[in-house]
Length: 453
Ligand code: ARE
Ligand code: CA
View 1: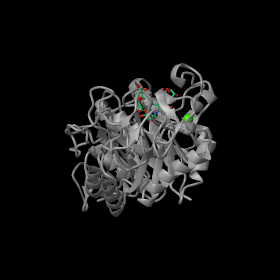
View 2: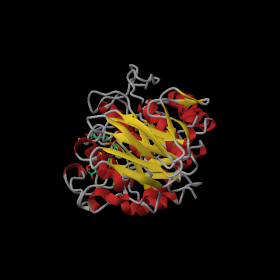
View 3: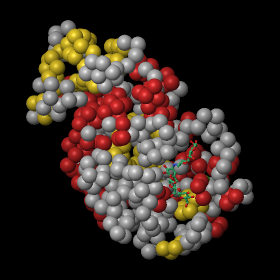
């Protein structure tokens, strides 16, 4: 049944973009599991064309689980280790297309391929030739048929309406399910009719979490809403709007963020501050480069009851195409956090707010406060409270109404809670549910019942 939002009490997804399998396995054991992440999303595991750019992973040449990120055996070990740590695995799945058609060659694991030709898998009869535009390229996103039958950036477009193709795709996904994976991010979902995705889903051997990549584009005929029958859909407006609010509008406007802004229904919306595409291409979203403001935006996302949040975890890059740290043969190196890899999911504020999200799961929003500008506060009824001050000045001498039980709480923005102690400031909520604190400029305080002393 679990086809919509991730189920269970731990729902936050960490997207370990381009991490290799041994590193993902270690992170599940050493950090994601212990800190309460419910899922890890991993980059495409199938065989891809050779080279260094990260995006070559989005050019499948076969469905063998062999890639620069590791072997099938390493992938299996990773899934097992993550499960043992209580972390489920979501796989980025590329099924709309195969490789770009500039040339043929030999894939990462040795499979040969050519122009619309993947021996033993697909031949020329399995691809669309839309007969429009130079190279059958998609140029007009206002034309539904073209978006789904022409080629996305020159990638050979599979006939997802064909039963043979659907069976092949489902075969790949069922192979992943047999290795134990729990969910799929369906890349380029906009480029496949929702009914084709439904038919492929119908061929899966068991239920799995599904999240579809359908980028909202103003005025486009194909929108995220038409895919919600298959599972969750990424809400791209969320990160864009949140960045605009933090950069040039008012945090006070976030009072009805989400559905109130015309975004997808909360139950099917997959949210993120940035993803691997938007952190490179879409001017305006907040990324690791924004430092503290990025942390505050993630804190808001994790505190505010809307959608299923994904925390992005990036490697450091200077230009769009740059691949992850790798050896001379383009094999991805093991991750070293904070050296070539940003590891945003480990930042104190972000990691501790995962604990906040888990502790406040299911609790409504109440006690909203704003000063009309950049200072906001709200409770997750009976479970937690956060106040964010994004003014250029400190707010001092103010009391906050939390509605929380009286007690001493760890301020998880500035301190880690563990074994009954807090490494940062302690907030004392009185018997009336109030506390008093000074909030520095561009800072926050967050407390929850899971981090009470
Ligand atoms: C690369 C080269 C191309 C070359 C191609 C084939 O950059 O020049 O033609 O290879 O040789 C990623 C990279 C691409 C890369 C591709 C394959 O981003 O640069 O191409 O891998 O290696 C649309 C889609 C959306 C898609 C974005 C990027 O709707 O699905 O474009 N996002 C996913 C992934 C990407 C990935 C792919 C799909 C392909 O997340 O990382 O590409 O698997 C408006 C529309 C959007 C549209 C957007 C950009 O906003 O509303 O729908 O997104 O414009 O065009
Ligand atoms: Ca297509």
